[in-house]
Image (cartoon, rainbow, N blue to C red; front, side):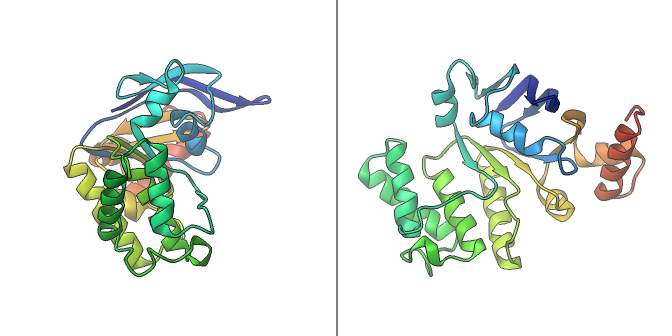
Length: 245
C-alpha cells in the first residue's frame, strides 16, 4: 500500500507538486494521469525517494520515505522513465546484479532472474549485452530488474512509451498477474487505452494538485463524460479555468 499526504516540491518559485495526497491499495492498479508538467514524475520520484519533499510525508507499506527511506525502497520496485541499464552487461546480468544489491542469495537471485525472463518473454535476448537492445527490450529488462526482489509495491513511470504492440501486451499481462497476486501497482501514463484496460483506480492531477481520485466509471460520471479521455480533458480544463472539478 502506498499513501501520501501533503506532498510539496518546489523548483525555485514553481510548485511542481503542491499539497498532494493519494492512496494506492494492494491488489489494485492505480493510474496517475495529468497533462505534461502536472507533477506526475515529480510525485513518483518523491515516492521512490530520489527527490526529498519540501513538505508532507509518504509511506510504502507503513515505511516512511523520510524517516526510513532504505526500508521504503526495500518494499518497492521502480521503473523510472528512461531507466538506464549497464550497457556492457547482458539482460540476465543486469537483473542478477540488482538481486545482489537487494541481498538475495545466489541461488535465489538466479531463480528469480530465470522466472522473470520467462514471464517477460526475454529468452531471445537474455544473454545479449544491453547496448544492443531495442526500446522494448530495455523496458522489459528494467522491469525485470525492478521486480527481482519480489516487492509488494511497484511504481512505473510511463512504462509503455516506445513499446510495440507485442511488448505492450506482455506488460499488460504481467501487471494483471501482479494485481491478482496482491501487489500494489501505481503507474503514470498518457495513453488512455492502457489506463482503460488496466486501472481499477485513477488519480487525475493538474498543477501539482489532485483533482479527483476515483474508479474509472465514477470518474466519467463525475465529469459527465462517456469516455475516460473526454472525462480527463473536461476535468483538466475545468481546473485550468479555475472552476471546481
